[in-house]
Length: 338
Ligand code: SF4
Image 1 (spheres, helix red, strand yellow):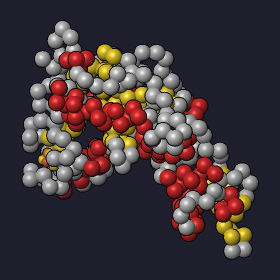
Image 2 (cartoon, rainbow, N blue to C red):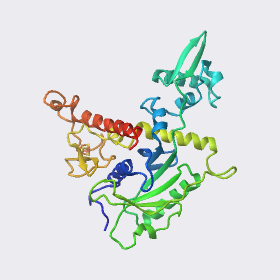
Image 3 (cartoon, protein in one colour):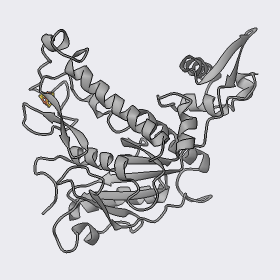
Image 4 (spheres, rainbow, N blue to C red):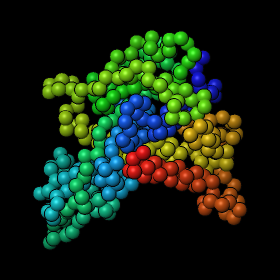
């Protein structure tokens, strides 16, 4: 029997894995600083949970560039911005697309305060506010499969083989719900040996002792010259973009695509995690069903938004702010170490 509540979806399992990782990663060994996000990756491959390992000093250096993620265009400007003033076309490597797009990114970067900009004649010059730090130590990908039976393992195996061959992450794990079998079924399934296996027991919620290592992963080596996979520059750039998204979004951003403005939307505490719950359905809803198309959606009554409700903007806005504040709080805590 599996240690998960019968009405839990993979989505709820995933949120709890994220919360557990935020508290307890790595399962063994010294913790430095970690950021956790969900549903990130590349066009071809999206991971359920992404853990970015860093350290408080490097994270503090990244925080100088603000709380929002830097997309690839902004990264191009910020990473190459010079210490002293220079025309942006002299300072930045040719991006492989027209300069006018770079110029737009320069204006955007200056608007965000992540570089300085001035006009000299008809030229735009830039300089950096600080060196963009090398802040990503390791990226760990976790695939959540609460019920890892033979067919789920088969479906997962080819994706995991792809992860292993590309080595975009430094380590890949599968997280599955613990069972009371004498040998955990996950161990018997046919998966790449480089992939680690975690068993999660969320019967008492996402507590820090909820995860146990069943099988340790091998560190993945990036493909060498001439082998298939991303080139070194590509790989570095892709990893940085993933890390930036993890930094900016965290794992609580699900609330931005769900409907906390629905009168039935609740956050329910389970262990250390706050999980979305639908009062109308009497269970934890998935992110996909909690959308504008939900037939049971009802807007929060106007009275909730005005007087009588203690949080400005009504409970929907309050929930969004609460989760954003928790994301901020976690980032602050990682800056101070543990
Ligand atoms: S009724 Fe639908 S939209 Fe409202 S909280 Fe439930 S799942 Fe979400």
